[in-house]
Image (cartoon, rainbow, N blue to C red):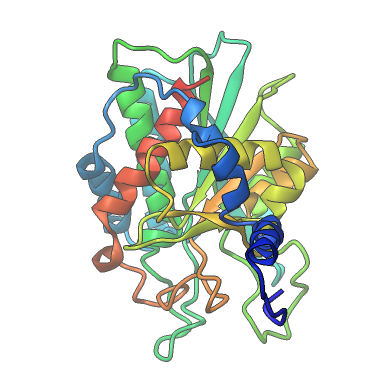
Length: 337
């Protein structure tokens, strides 16, 4: 329409209508006919407080163990701590111990750690994150074969979920659903870029693949799942991840609508992002649980951030405001059921 010459007032009016119908982001024609946006009808319910200070401390504690790489002492120590934390919140806790094979043929001892709030409730929501760390800094320029702290990639999602579990378990206000917290292991042991060893096919997300095929609770079902991955960096951007939009667009839109109603569109972006192989893929494909991924991704750079899989992924990049936004949104989703 930009190449058309508008000569008359009526022509201008028609052109404006046509232009409005082509703008899929702002949709001014809808705003003109309906002054109240649809999301204004969404009523946010009362929920417990989420503490970003507490979430930050949970992240810091994980990092203090050292890199949580399978088959290391730090990995076992953190697994024991995570189980103890969930148990201390009064959750019914289950640890799924398994041996899985990495891309290089190495056997990894992994621990998928699950805590259930109101395990008797029939209607359930699954919240998950991975807790292991990358065994290599293969995107760094130095010490490429050394493991990373994984403050954002691993610890941040777990820290947010631990705080949600703590807050819900201590609050007098109960949600109308049961909530399951699952911390997946072996997510970040995927084949390094450029490596000639083994196959990269399904070399990531080893813990969630195992869990989704062998869920440790017979007959387990969840209405939907939400995966948190890399949710702690400053000024984080969470587009609508592609695999989430393929398998569970209704869940994505529901969560993003709540985020928008809370005023967090600067974090929860209103556009579709790239398809990312993450733990949610296997929950959708194997367990048939419609699961979405809230994950930091910079569309302009096609990247997870300059710190991704480098030694810069440490506590210095963790932002309490980002943790607060993610925690508040997920908590609101739970209490809006």
